[in-house]
Image (tube, rainbow, N blue to C red):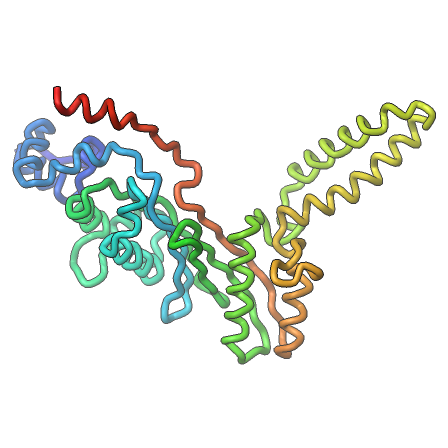
Length: 313
């Protein structure tokens, strides 16, 4: 019997979209012949995935949760259509996979696929293959983030279009409900206003300098028409404008600098301080993750009429 290498199994999986274990079984049964292995998979009813696995999965769900032990997880699992994203079986699958992330702490998506699926002795990858068959669409586990420490607060917006996980450091406060309420407000802010960073300190220096250069050039251009003002003074005026505009820049990209959506007369930073003071302790926003389902995935625009026409030829 031919030796079945991991590389050969991986190649068959990429060709068919079938789970790793089933691919290995097919290759063993076919003495390492990939073409025969595909036929074997087709005979076993697994070949239905062959076409589905190549289709773009740009819909789906971004889901956030916190386990009983306090571990926070936000995960994106993609399907081909929004219809399937609303399917109860698909949503249960997403919740189960999120629980695996919380409990098994996989290093990456590949490790997650090789972890054990809840209530079974099978891998997540193997169960995913079954879901592809039963649901009838390509399903892809795209990404996840896991926070093990601190106080984690999840938020899911628009039935999974956006998933947010906020991580807080809390000291001297026993009122867990009030802290969770604050975390929920912050998560909703993140979902709506899409900050990139927690604070100014996190913004890369090169990004700050680039923005300053853009704003300075813009301010100089605005003052160029007034030739009565000396060049040095125009430069000084422009630099002063840049200071104000950089404040606006930080207020856009940094969570703590943004106006708090529920009370826009204060910043998020001020609101967090006020809540912490009322509760008699300290609260720090440590980090957050915001997933938008399908973000960055190129969606294929199908010509439905052409597809139907090709089927009846």
